[in-house]
Image (cartoon, rainbow, N blue to C red; front, side, top):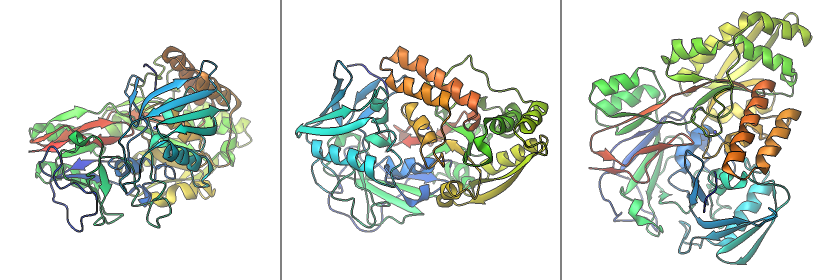
Length: 505
């Protein structure tokens, strides 16, 4: 079967031994043996690791050990089996039937079956805190003819639905565990590792191999730690042998430093779009004002001066290596005079003022935002910068206390995922819609073949850029490094070091 499928996260892996209690279902003898892994991240993901209620980019590494997805998708958009082993649209496109993998259980030992999938979809659609409701909006109802079969009845064209099932919307949680008071920090999925009682949310999440996992061959380490730490500790930790792998989102020279020390450094090929999310319920409701901001930013200077040229200048909402990227669509050329003229046409001849929030967890984004602040000032745009903890960023934007949020979009297995995230209520206060973009997105959702989807999403990128829906600055070309004795670590969207096949000797 052939078919298709975006707060900075910084990752490192080090040898540690799990401490604390051992929960029921934890494996005492994972298939590969070897030392434990520690994943070190710059932000705590808002201390919410429920994929249905948290869209923060920094949450992905905390979710990865716990959850499988219904489907998987590679960088070329080809789908493969996950928790679903087969999928088929009806000839008229009104139903989608999923065949589920047998012998799978949640980490609380309850069965993973069609009823559980139905419950997950209904929760994702109806939970007031859901961040994936829009992704599931095309689903009208769900039938469960037998434990291994799910039939989705669709209200509208849903060519992007399979791609969504390769991301957070496809991460299946245990319905039995949802009422747990600590579910946000101790989620229960079907993945290779489960949350340990020894976890300390906000500083050190501990995951132990789940003894009942359906594919024990991937459990080559007994324990994974996901710890929060300063970016400045990543490279010294790797060279000092306390860290075994790191995603290099810090200083642009870190890769050269590690390579010179004899450590392997590789390109990640991941989405790491730096952008200003805009609250379009205020001054940014006017597309001329948004375009003025976009034209006032010199993207190439930021890339060359602050990131050592290790980036691609772009204003598109998908990263340059995506099959949906339009290489012929150039980013806007900086034009301060045109920016001033647009502000005057929008009724702001004296310029505008607004506040932008940014994560206080690291320094790189704050440095970039300071450079953008200076560029905007030349066009009569005064931007006040307000660093704050990850958990406060989106609520501040949504409440209108800030009109912009500078962050990164870490993509997704399918371009439909970051685009859905960018237009979701959390990132789009007030539910702003641009007519041309809305039309292009609808056409993309209706496309089902790889060629048709690629063409449709290129039109989405054009509409997104033309409307300056948000102001994309660049895509940073990230690298990651590993220590000697570590194998099987890879990078994948949405910006995680995949340790599902990792081993330490």
